[in-house]
Image (cartoon, rainbow, N blue to C red; front, side, top):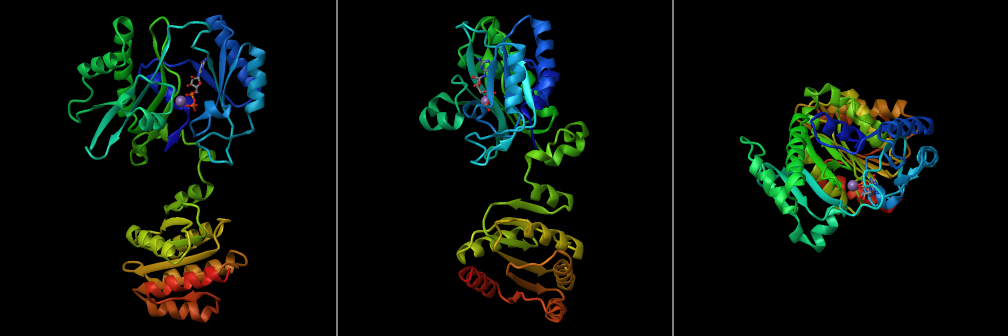
Length: 398
Ligand code: GDP
Ligand code: MN
């Protein structure tokens, strides 16, 4: 699960890592109030207003703007809120800004002794260990850096039993070119970031930039944090940070029915049981000249209700031009699947897109009877190859 920058920063702050202080606002009035509070506390008129969306590259897209008075914060917030923000990571359609973070401008105009770094903690899957990835070239996109100057990216592997060790933090601070107080503060910062990561069961914690201020404090200016869905049951307070506006509505709907559904954007929807068969089905769709619209594993124990829910979700995808239902009945009984399909046809309104159905295994014959009796204009297939051929045929006739 992704969370917003302001939420990630509040977690970092709770575990003792320095952050660029600020508060979230959903209206321009709230943004002005936040700016007033920050001004009272710090006596400064320099602010930054940051769009809160689940995508990076906001700086490039105009989603991070400086403001030099409380009024300007209000105007900037009002210009951003409700608008669509397009960044290199959102795709051309962009994302609607529903919240902004109003924070102190921690760069202090005119000061030259500041530095920006990149620090992240992520899982090294090859090694089965977490690692800290860091570079003194902060502020830039790491993807770009990895291409152009890979020698500037360093990693420090974290031993699962020992955890992050102080000597590793010293090493990182040294490689970042820090000494004295700045180095000490960086080491404390790294420990706090690591603690946040572990305590929240995060999958990724990426801070770009980490700022060294001219008075040698170390602050998280940005924060991208991804939490492990499988550990969320241990963190009800974190589960509440979910923002469903940021997620694909069809995926949210599928989650409600415990369906494993991932939208991938093609034109042939598929409903399958079992992840392996689902992958194979996506392959066969591609081989038939189509593009799979989604991955959908209805699970080994799919009932009539899950089938109905899955079918409805695929039907809601406007890109879908054909649907392939490919079920192998092991524990799942094909007759139930067939009833789910027939039921959806009755209740979902007129279904005009072609549907190819392959039901094999337990009670496949009854299933065939149910489909036949229903009089539905669907294409039936017995073998996988036949299903693929019918997908091809249907696509050609579009
Ligand atoms: P991203 O573009 O989505 O990664 O958003 P960031 O939070 O990283 O902000 C983008 C860039 O804006 C950063 O790399 C900083 O250089 C700059 N920035 C962010 N906060 C401040 C601030 O308080 N003051 C100034 N001057 N620049 C800032
Ligand atoms: Mn950033």
